[in-house]
Length: 443
Image 1: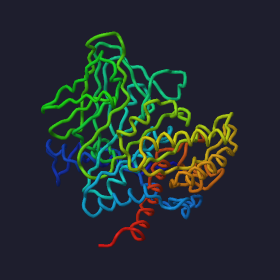
Image 2: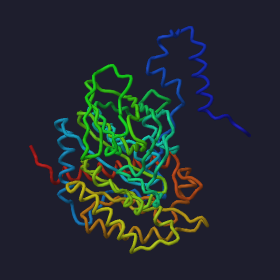
Image 3: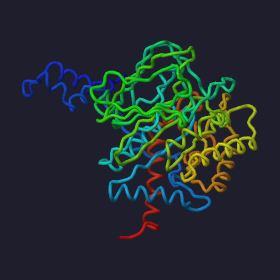
Image 4: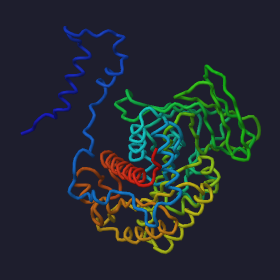
């Protein structure tokens, strides 16, 4: 017997109430703009998947492991969080590298949301973003993108593309005489979007600054703007007297024939809190990030306190996977990261379990996990053993059966990524609390 979905029925009742009104609670036009009513008009929120316990998840493994002990870098990181907790000061900057798991920004978006909720009176900032819509790819729902002009995409996975890429791993170029890009940061009240909105009053635009063919100009502003050109660092900076949540940039050719190349935008403010830059490229491997010649220079500008790496799934799915080469390339990337951010703490995430196209277990994940554990020991990094937390080899099938993963045998769905974000946040907070109780100075 077919039964109606109770969520759809309730949604229709709410819509009927809003459109038809009520004799007991008449609605005015002005009321339609109240935040509470905007929430009622949006789709009903699903139950958070983290509220359910799953038998296949190894919750006892959900912790950060420090194979070589708590490094000075992690002590500095946790001391900064202490200062944030006690004095509402400090900016804790986090950069997270990955592949498609990160590009969609659902997993990392959930971590960003939970970090913001941890200290709700500390706004923090959005950090580095790239408008993936420019290159016709999927991106973060934390901001909307509109643009004009013809743009060409460049990705680090295209190893034969000579375009110089930066820390974002992607770029967009245009040869039009005039092009525009508009960024609007979203927040609660917009289509039931659960994540916080971030304001900014500084924007650093990473681009091919060595070319003098284009001029960048913010348009449609109602406030003064200061422009600073940092040629050596490779970006143009705009400073605003008041905070913004949206910005329209115009790229106008002033000479020559060369293209304009956009490598990313860093959105900043002076508010204490967390800055969480999620950097992901669909299909990216370790070699793809090593292909980014400006990665170290731009990472140093982001000045991270913590660098998280969840790269490697695409490496292990290659037919030519070689464990020794995997470890060597991972080490080369870690060395580049350490050269750019020598005082940053390192956190390595083991590869998620995944299946071959034949639905067989991907045994390469086991070798990659061992390599990551060795590198963590060597570089005094922390490890979040996602492979173990998921349930180990062949656990992906159980995530599929629980409606937490997709049929493609490698990606999670929205609920699955949300759950990963919750699990990681819990492990991170537990590690901080352990430090706080054992090592933090008493007052």
